[in-house]
Amino acid sequence: MPDDVPDDSTDDSGAGLTQEICDFVADLDLSAIPEDVIARGRIHMLDSMGLALAGGASPVCRILGHYAIRNAAKGAAAVYATGDRYAPAMAALINGTAMHADNFDDTAPQPTPDRNGGIHASAGVLAAALAAAEAAGADGPALSVAFHAGCEIACKLNHAIDQRHYQGGFHVTSTLGVFGAAVAAAKIMGLGPAEIGNALTFASSRSAGVRSTFGTMVEQMHTGLAAEGGVVAAELAKDGLIGNGTIFEAPSGFMAAAGGGFLGEAIIGRLGTPWAIIDPGTSIKPWPNGSLVHPAMTLFADMIGEHGLTADTVEHVTVRTNQRIARTLIGALPQDSMQARFSIPFALAVLLIEGRAGIDAFTDAMVCRPDIVALMGRIDHVAYEAVEDGFTNVTSFVEVTNTDGTIHNGRADFALGSAQSPMSYDDIADKTRGCAAAANWPVEKTEALIAAIARIEEISDVREVTALLAG
Picture 1: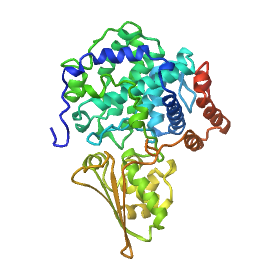
Picture 2 (picture 1 turned 90 degrees about the vertical axis):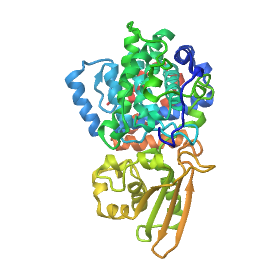
Picture 3 (picture 1 turned 60 degrees about the vertical axis):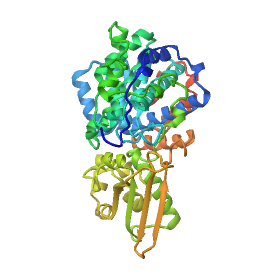
Picture 4 (picture 1 turned 180 degrees about the vertical axis):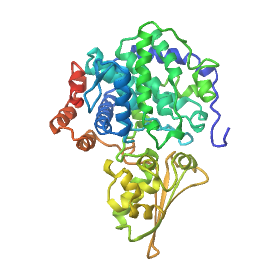
């Protein structure tokens, strides 16, 4: 075991975990969810829906569209941006992928700085819940409850599983996201505790995805694969599939096999206490790239404004992060737009030269542009040796050396869009407008979507929402 990975081995405190999850999901209703949690949920649902429009035109979604045409029957759930209709699992696969295709979706972090590996929970959970809800004609309150149930389970599992899971290379967005998607779909379908347990058992056999796929189309699919697996799990459980009521805590169950153990204290008695979307919070992205890049981007953007930095005045930039971030992100010179989403040098070069970093910045043409390439060569990303008192798990330092010898230093412990610097519903409405514009989506449908999600708990049929997303 690496020195920086704590020993989170399971013990008797984990007994009954699966049953506790099943009971929590089955018993949950809207009245049990605090208003501040519901309000944050609206923000994250709108964020993911806007991303589905922008991501729907991505190459990976076109490939999945061809796959669906070859292999899937038409059905009751819409594929957003195109309006094609398939069975719920297939629609969830494509829509979940679209929500993550631009790497612009939210990230739920770990609660303590000694752990690493945030999870993109919303996309997989929401895609599964929406597909199941559209097929069932469920109402807005049911969608809201299913979304919160799924995100809470995915996030708390991520807080609990031994760090070996992430550090060994698994991508928790997919491996743990499938469980959140399964309970969200199961909640829409009205499954009881035993059936939810059966769905979770099947989901454990769908849990997959490794971080070596970062910067590829395969990683873009991880949220979609989680959503698809979750819908299939709930459908099979509804039809009578029998699984294992102790799939998480069993000696050879998921947590032992995939992580080597888990912290019972991080999840037992902690479901909804507090809600993970509030504490430690879920970060929304102001830029469409890896969230681990964002503290440095936030800091560098502030430094550009404060010191009047330009590509002509900056001689060299050094970014320092913890070793886990440095190992997760790719090297200095990305070769295409997908790799660029995991590169600190590219992100800072774009900010300095273009003054912004929107969806249109992450293109193959931008990656190859001579001025961007030249500036990336003057930006280093290195790791600091130790995590000191007061550091968060994303603490980042930026040092800028100007051509005149002037040096500017800064430190960021959080990023814009994090729980410590949150974006509001109005902020996300603007982000959604930008995503919709990138997809050439009708302005009137975009504005109607923004208004509808603001009152989602009053909507009697979710198809009122999905109609605004479907071409």
